[in-house]
Length: 231
Image (cartoon, rainbow, N blue to C red; front, side, top):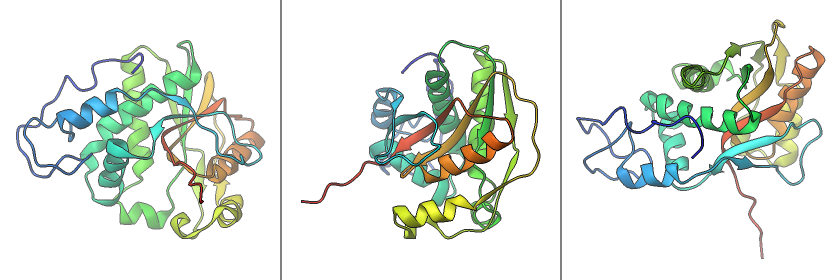
């Protein structure tokens, strides 16, 4: 994995309150919630372009750490749905790696996360992407990147995307976000999300930001779902 280094070397769990976030196994030697095997799997991932097909209009170039599978999928589910908020630190650091790959040479960067709806934030005891963004920003800053975090958007109530098809996701995303305030940006604007499926949410957020003069250079996500091909 490129660039920022040292993610797994700084903290080993001394107690085992839960299984590995990646595979669920109860084994000794967890590092930031992951067993050694899952750490190896995560370290083997390399950020790469991830573009849904078809891609919605307005979707910026998107880079993902890896496919929504294996240890990455397990970690995201444990973090978002099972209340393991401590995983924000390693997942946020991994997201910083994706930002670095998406931007290219080190320079000023402004991070804008896709906001949670109020309902989702209550269910998860806080905005899960906001936590990831803060850890990603800290990681980038420690590596010498001039970084700024902006929260210019608010999310309006919308249906759970899990229950929607591609057309439904696009329709829901179209009116899902409103500009709260615009702000000065420094360098490249990068959208952050945890998972990209159809790209409808990232495209909708990008259009709102573009209208406010904050055109995203790229979107950085942890995981990209893989389209299933039916026989």
